[in-house]
Image (tube, rainbow, N blue to C red; front, side, top):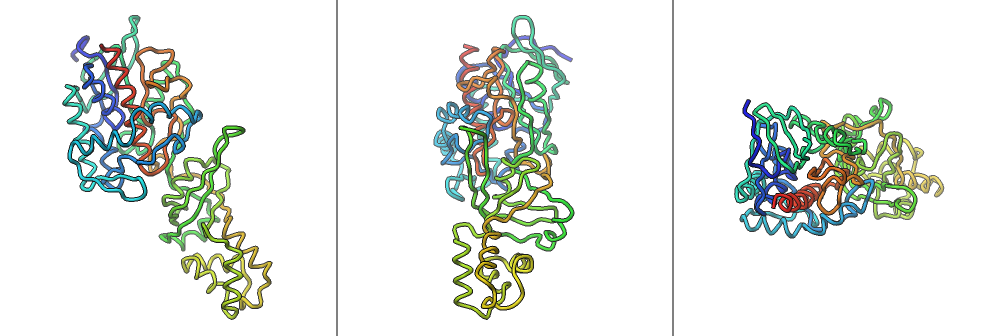
Length: 410
């Protein structure tokens, strides 16, 4: 092996969204940057995102769309590098894009356009990107420089940017390296968990769920975060899909980031509808109809049959007391289910938790007690909602670190 002892002002571990952004920013500002990644290609997670179209940002991004033990931490980086800034780069590279849902921007052609753009930005900053480099050891010498040993040699630099992501999607090479390095250098780690992930249920629930597999319905799910003065409530209104193992769909993925084992899931099957009034109106207008027919006006047929059998008597609506319909309406608006767990990191889009933000500077992502060590992207305890927010955090945190790295190398 050949030892490389000079030549770089910064080493970036990880050639994903945050790492490439940090490297390009630092390189174009004059820093001498080396990017190392154990994967054979850069940006592998970018390539599969958004169904291969990459939901590269959300124009409505703000700190309120992120989960963190410190909800204020993300404010600085997000304010200094905005969705409009990233979109300007996309347009400068003449990448065609479109807005799919409110604020969500996707590539017209392929996520490959975003990876190629980032590679060109790195090239413009003379960044040395090396893939298929397995990290063997990372240490800090007496002079405060970082020593990175790989299966292709040893590299040194005064600045180290850790952008190796979280534990989600291990088939793409995800590892716990960022968390391991954080602990090695004395940084606390908020316990990681799968996020933006389908929820699974126990055997009893799966018995009635499996016949509903593939069925989709728009729901409202209210989630709770934090305690005391920091507590807040968030409601997601989006699609929910029944699976053979439980529940999925955008509303469930959003809720999964807030859900903790043992918590109940509170689902509104008729979001935006006064369920009591609607059922009583149907009873008045169609008194000879049965419970299944009534609920089929509001829900998919299979789900209507299930709910009617469980919560309504047989017979015509005319013979059902208003109190019985009111009780059924309450169930529809507050359907309480008990998830057993999640599909895990294999199906999780991101990792919740990560490097404790109290150990980092919100201005530049640098470790407070380890000068020259930066943590960015998914490695940090900042987790965005579904819809392009996690990419915007990658761009913003990477940009913040890249600027600081350039200042150090200057």
